[in-house]
Amino acid sequence: MMSPEIKSKKQYIRIWFEFYKLSLLDPDLKDNIEKSSKFYKPWGDVSNLKFDEWWKTSKPLFGETRVKEITRIVRNKHVLNVSVPLNLPITNSLKEIKKLIEDKQQDLMGDGYDQPKKSKIVGGGKYELTQDQRGCLFWSCKGKKTN
Image 1: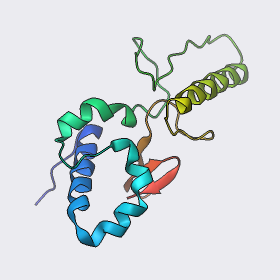
Image 2 (image 1 turned 90 degrees about the vertical axis):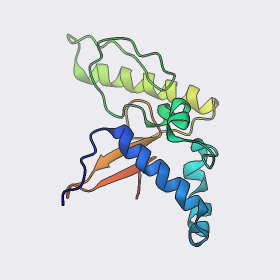
Image 3 (image 1 turned 30 degrees about the vertical axis):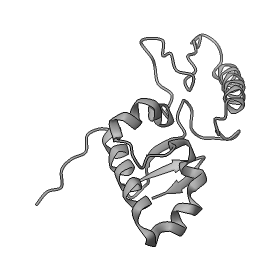
């Protein structure tokens, strides 16, 4: 029997969300939940929420996590839209982009957004779905691996 194919990042997040809600009800997991409370703090109280309701306000936590070419301006405080002249040396552009990102992250930290100063994640979002060399998927937050 084949497992159903999960085709979108949102569906991975839905499964994670539902598992997290179930784990909140399991007394055997109480210690683990307390230890991970800082990690899940941005999620808020999910115990009485349906995923789609929660997703409306929490989607920015899982924003784009890689540099990409855009075809339209994204209006999201967790995304920085930039224009990069392609006729300049890459090192100059990267320095300027780095400075823009650092300034934007500093502004967000003032709003309670907990993005680390050093991060391999470029773009919005606190959580990132990553695949390791063996093909295993895991969630990372602030460069830390979680299951």
